[in-house]
Image (cartoon, rainbow, N blue to C red):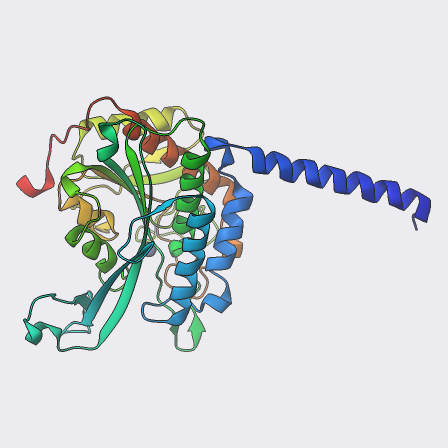
Amino acid sequence: MVGKRVLIPICTFVLTILSVLSAAQDSASGKESINAGDLECHVSFLASPLMNGRANGAPELDIALNYLVSQAGLNGLKPAGDSGYFQNYSVVRSKNALRWPYYTLKSTGNNSRENVGEEIALRNVIAWIEGCDPVLKSEYVVFSCHADHIGRINGEIHPGADDNASGCAALLEIAQAFQTSPEKPLRSVVFLWLTGEEIGLLGSQAYVKNPPFPLDRTVADLNIDMIGRVKGIADTTLDTPVTGPYGVFVISDDQSRELMQIAENADEGSIIDFDYSLSGRTHHLNLFARSDQYNFVMNDIPSLFFTTGLHSDYHTSNDVTEKIDFKKMEQITKCIFDIGLEIANKKQELQVDNPYSKR
Ligand SMILES: [Zn+2]
């Protein structure tokens, strides 16, 4: 047993170290403020059993969204919804509700025949940081992710730690990095925590239908959906590819050569390796059209989709916080920040040389 007189100095020493560490963490600014510990805190909350799997229409999704709003507020982000940070929209159950998408956006016209199914009121969270250039600040770089998941199925909570508490946490950290950088970006940056993704990419559809920032001034979308896994934690097959300890899939359809070049620069400057092998509409998994970036792509906004891949825990009760590799997530999140920062600070707008709508 350690004597009392020894114990007190040891305690004082430990407390001093802890306070120095936490002060160091608090004072980190810009990209260095992105860290594994913060990411783990956010994911632990959003994927806790108390969130009940964050299903669309469930009160727990609203609690998760309120958490994101409070974090956005603490970081000093500006709100851009129709009600503070919230953008309200409604969805109705599809006529053929056995096939995905199970819901469609509620039509705002008087065409009530389209709106016959069960209705759910949903909301996205939208926050932004104004750019510092008097002209370029009216152009926007979007970071997107979805906050909803699939709730409880057959009595089992599906926590959705990777899908997509990981993306929500990354967006919070990227926003904090921009906000604490000594210099603000030239263009404005927008952060979207979307809902309705799991039932038909509906939050992003609602956003592009009613955008608070003009789409023709939106220069890129960087979408994050499931960036927390490393190969070997769950089974991996051809249909569930997962990247290794330093890998991330970057999924695109070559809308802009310039954007691909910016991604390659970030890849070269980082320990993380980008794997483009799941790109394009012809890939058999079709991941390119399976997350929110697709609604931006359809509007000719150059997009990149970041994911560590589909594992055998995907959409099961085993998608839990304990299986996330937060050190890897930190490195991936820093890469995505770098890409967004380079786009936000480009003198010229990103060239779109292969628009999706013209194919
Ligand atoms: Zn997802």
